Image (cartoon, rainbow, N blue to C red; front, side, top):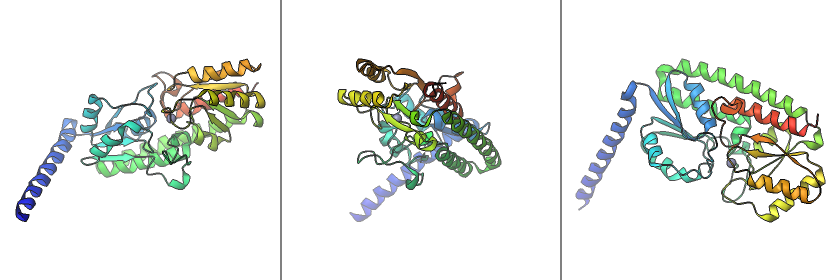
Length: 310
Ligand SMILES: [Zn+2]
């Protein structure tokens, strides 16, 4: 009996290894280049920049797509299974992808960039979501993720190590420049008006980095609906602080923020919608926010122009 079990176990292990080997070969044999899949636009941008011409990157979540709610399609599963390396945000951002990532991790390199950041540097949240997943909005944390991408690609494809090193260095210098630009933009806003009010709490790290107060209507995930009480409380806050502008997000329907604006008006104060911020998705091709550094610049300048009252 014991021998029989052992035999069956060996066959299963052998079968699994053969399967894993085959799926690995498929990806590598297509064109001999490393095949990388990334979930969010921000992570895909980083992976593309570090990979350069040495590897192929497929980004999954396009402009306007909300990663909290996105359910992977059958086509996405095929894309994942053809990859050599998968990068995703983790920290429960891609809430509907946890199971497929677990599955993929059995046969390929799967890296949850947020989960590998030092916990001490993360903003805490609640029992269901212990850490705020929107770490990319602090460029210093995002650079740590870029270093992880660089290390992962070098380990998976050592022949191109020098290319990945050089690409990552150039990209991180651009991130530093965008960070400096964002600091200069936020400095234009009078100290008592440095408040960013958005549809959901995506900008905690941004606010911490640049010295703003942050209020989101829906909390940390768009999975929870904003209630009437939240709208009224936020409207009271805006009136009390005489906040000139609030902001919509490209990946969240504008209805909730428009409801806040209406509630403020009903209290006899005018708050304008100061523009569109890019929180969980990048912009369309051709838009400034189509890249990670462009997103940082766009968000900081949009806030400054609406809140500075120049
Ligand atoms: Zn979010």
